[in-house]
Length: 313
Image 1 (cartoon, rainbow, N blue to C red):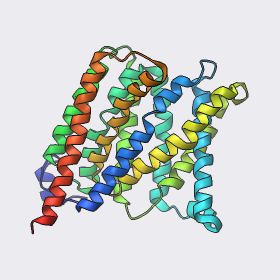
Image 2 (tube, helix red, strand yellow):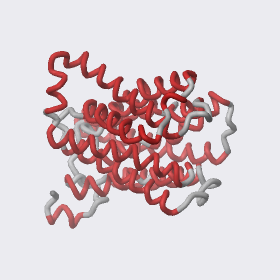
Image 3 (tube, helix red, strand yellow):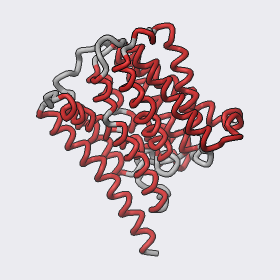
Image 4 (tube, rainbow, N blue to C red):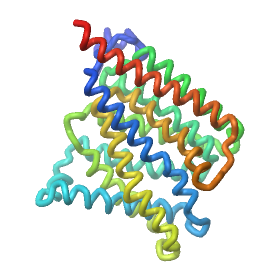
């Protein structure tokens, strides 16, 4: 926990230890790549027919996440597969619980309120990452990152300004809880950065979510044409992107990693436009531009700062 003096400086105090340039760059690159890989996820969801319910989609998506990561871990660890699950420790168990809760609350929010409201609420994740990182591990946020978080949130509001307010309060609160849980997970992975538990934790969470939603789903009624999209989504796109994204949290501040999650929010509608010719409102381009400038600007300044500290003793 941070000391009394550290707390007095405040969460937005720019004075804090800077990770070295290589480590910081690795974390930013991993998480940014993860969000780029995840960005077609919205398009894949649109490709699924109306005959498959949301619960069907979640069941198969989670099941394929479990199977894909289990296969990856089996190849990577071979004889020690069982041991990596039984020896995850506190970090692995907490990460598994948070990832499972994340999936469930996200689905509940989508079911209860508008997609626009959910995405705007999820855009508060960098704020939660900043505050929780300060409270739990003493990781104060640089001023540039605080400004970037504010600008990015404004950009998200601009994107969905025409659709806000069409949901209900309970769904909005659940979406906010989802953002909180995601921010908390990033901070805890940062705290336990010496332990590589992300693949196995995400694997177990996929199994748990599939089992939880199975009573609400009708797997036998899902068309094969939908299953191929769900297999691509759950077997490749989501597990690869999430392992990279959460893996980046081990190498860079939680608030900055959380800020990168907004890349997927901006690129998602563009993929839908490319794939199914869905018209993109002008405000999406304006708001998306604000988000990209905020995210890229923060990462660029962070990398330059790290290099300058190495070059200038």
